[in-house]
Length: 385
Image (cartoon, rainbow, N blue to C red; front, side):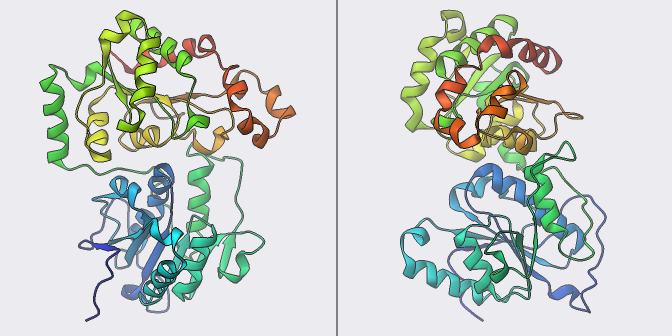
C-alpha cells in the first residue's frame, strides 16, 4: 500500500444530504469514480464550492470525492458528509517551485477520473493538468483549452436568488453528463458538542443566543470594511431600537481597530457590546454565530457562514464588489443587504469596478448610515427580539 501523502486528510466515505441519488452512466465505471474538486483561497469561495462536492455525492454515492482547499478555510468544510478526503494546498507551495512540483506529482499519483476546477488560476490549472484525469472541467478562458477537456463561460447575471457565485459553480458541475442539481445552498455541519459548547459560553455571560446579534465588524481587508465611524453609528442605531447584546467578531490582530470602533460608539452602545467571549478559532465562531438571532455587518466570509447556518443576515457590500455575485438567498430566506448601487446606480454607469476599488474610501463615504437605517430597521423588526 502506498504511503498516504501528508497533505491529505481522510475520513470515512459517507453519503450526505437528503436529495435523491442515482447511479452514474459512465460505461460501467460507477464505483470507480474518483473526483477532485479544486477551490483555493477565501472562506466564502470554499463554502460555496462545497456545493459541487455535495451534488456529486448525491448524484454518484459510490464516487470518492476529494476537495482541495487552503488550510485556513478547512473549518468551513470539516465534518462535511459529502467530502471523503480533504487535500490541503499549503502556502509553502506558492513560495517554492520545488515543493509545488512535488505536490503536483502527488496529485498525479491519485489517479483521478474527473477534476472540477472552480478556482481557475495558474496553480489550479496546473493541478488539473497534472492530475491526468480523462475529464477535466473548468471555466472558459483564453488559455483554458490546454488544461481542461470541457469548459463553460462565466455568467455575470443571476437567474435565481442563489446569485452568480453559486450559479456559475453549478453550471460548471453540469459539464459532467447526467448530473442533476439537488442542492443550491451551502451548509455547514456543526457537531453536538460544538453547539452545546457555544450555549455554555453564552450562559457564562448570562446570555441566550436569541438575545444576541453577531456583528461582522471588519471586512477581510480595508477595501471591504465599512468606515468605522459609520459602523459605530449603525451599532448605536441597533442598540437604540433593539434589546440585543452585540458580539463583535474579529481576530486578535484586529484589536486596535475594534478599540477604535468601540470608542466611536456612544456609552449606551458600549455597554451592550461583548468582545471577550472566547472564540479560539473559526469553528468556535460558527458555533456562537448559530446561537445568535442574526448577523449584521460587512459582507464576506462571516456572512456566508451565517447563511450556511440559516442565521438571518444583513450585509453591507463594499462599493467595488458586484452585488449580484454574493447577495444570495434574499427572496425566500431571512437575508438582506445594501450596496451603494441601490441608492446611486448612476455611479456604476460612469465608473468601472477597478476605479471604484482604487478609490473605495471615496465611494464608501457616499454610503451614509442614514441610507441604510430604514432597511436595517425592517430587518431587525422581522428577525430580532
